[in-house]
Image 1 (cartoon, helix red, strand yellow):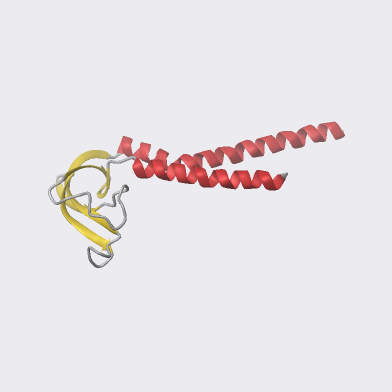
Image 2 (cartoon, rainbow, N blue to C red):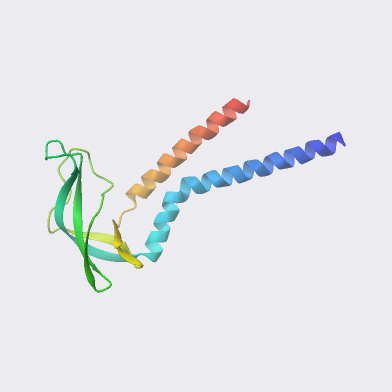
Length: 145
């Protein structure tokens, strides 16, 4: 009876570890999975920068982030929307100028939802979440010993 109980506990622990690890992997990959979804189901289009704003900071000297306002056509209508570029140095000149053409993705169910066609933020978030979860796993394994 004791041997049978020991095998049952080992199987339960292995199953729990597998489920826990699977959840962690899905969480770590969720930014990339979201980006794959967007790339597949959102509409690829082009937009034009019509303005560059400073949403954080009052003037050019104290600005934190420059954000372009993009104008684009979707579903037979004209839209303009603020987008937040990922690769942007804080307190630097904007990498966008009025009149620049940019690649965008917009949601066909709600064309006002738009984003720049870039993978950078999603890859960065995946690496960051993976690193953070890795630290948690190593810490838990270290505590279990």
